[in-house]
Structure formats: structure tokens, C-alpha cells
Length: 284
Image 1: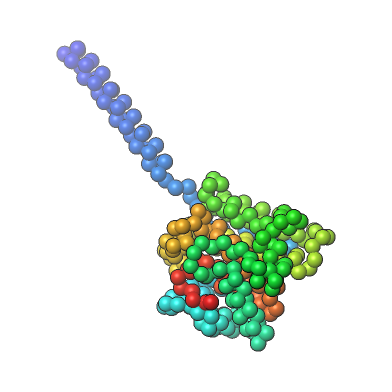
Image 2 (image 1 turned 180 degrees about the horizontal axis):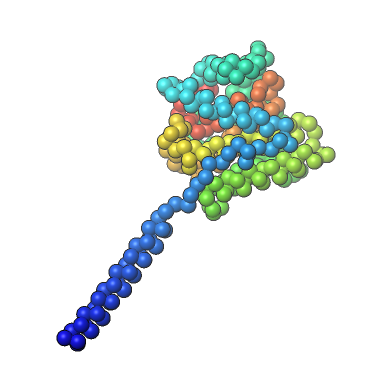
């Protein structure tokens, strides 16, 4: 009997050890499948009161919220419809919109056409010869070289290949951009037009990066942008669609800063929406 009990005890312990080993492997495997927690990025983390264009970034995000609700039943948004949406947004927010602003937005849409924003195909807002003749300052900023190279937007830093979570990458991008803003504000070499275009670009880029991070990682299906943001042809073809959308957004802001009468926040908001849901737009 003693011998039997001893054999039984040894067998039981062996089985227990095997089950424990299997359980640990399963726990480890499950842990590997759990995605790192993403956190919503709040306005106070984005803000930079030192940048005079910071409020335009807030208007940009507010316009994006308005736009996705206002176009929920639309099958297409052409230039005429876009102007109606802009007029309604200005009216709702008690912002002034006169003839000069409307002419400015029409000019802005022409510039977006030259940049390829809202058109089928990859989003690479590269200035054309025509755009460079219209707005030499924008050409310097969107295709930086020489003295403008240190001011190049680092939107590629948002890509997954840089490691970490989207939250970590986005917050790092925001802080890097704030550092660039400080550099622009301290520069004695930049003229006012270049300085303003850069500050507008940076402000919009910060708010845009946080906005699309929150859509993709926090709001997801609750946002009308989500499906298009991750499933559009451009999203599938792109290495980092969020990088592209933020780049398009910042390009729109840079152009908007030099077009008379145009608010960079709303103007960039149109560029951002066009980049995120390109199939809806027939602007140009």
C-alpha cells in the first residue's frame, strides 16, 4: 500500500507540474497577443500658447468634428458643397466670413488641386512648379532644402516602424514639433511670411496628429472617419496613412497661411478630411 501511495503521489506531482507548465505557456501566449494600451490625447497635451496659431489648431479639430456629422448622408462633396459647409461652420461659431474669405477659399482649393489633396492615389503633397510660382514661401516649406531643412516637419516619426505605442509616438511628435516652433520663434533669419507659414503648419500638425490618433485608437467605430481612415485605397497602399494625412493637413495649413482671408484651421480641416476620406471628395 505504501509503495502504491508513493507512486500515486509522484504521478500526481508530475501531472500537476505539466499542467502548471501548460498554463504558464498559455498565459504567456495570451499576454503576447494583448495590444499595448492606447490613451486618448487631451487638448492640454497638444496646446502651445507660445504659438500665435495655436487656436487655429483647435478650430481645425472642431471643424473636422462638424464636417463628419454634416456630411454623414452625402455621397460626394464638390467645391460648391464644401463652401456651403464652410459658411455654415463659420455661422455656427459666429466667425466672420465675407467675400474676401470666400475668394480665398476658392484660391485655396486651386492650390490643393496642385498639391493633389483629395485626389485618388497616394498622398504626397509635393509643390508643383505652378504652386511654387503662386506661393514661393510654401514651396520653401513643403520641399525644404538649405536653410529651411531644419524646419522640415517630422510627420514620418508617427509611423509604427519607430516603435512604441501610437500614444507614445504621437506625444513625442507633439513635443518635437513644439521644439521646432520655439526655434522658429527665436529665429532672426526668417521673414514674417515664412515664420507665419511654419507656425501655422506646426500648430495644425500637432492637433491633427492627436486627432487622428484618437480616431484610430480610441474612438474607432464611434467616429465617422474610422473606416475610411484604415480601409481606403490610400490607407491600404500607404506605409503610414496617419503620417500622410498629418502631412496633407500641415501642407494645407502652410498654403492657407499665405492665401488672403483664409483661416488656416478651417482650410487645413478641408485638406485633412479630403486626405482621410478621399472617395467622398470631388472638389477639383
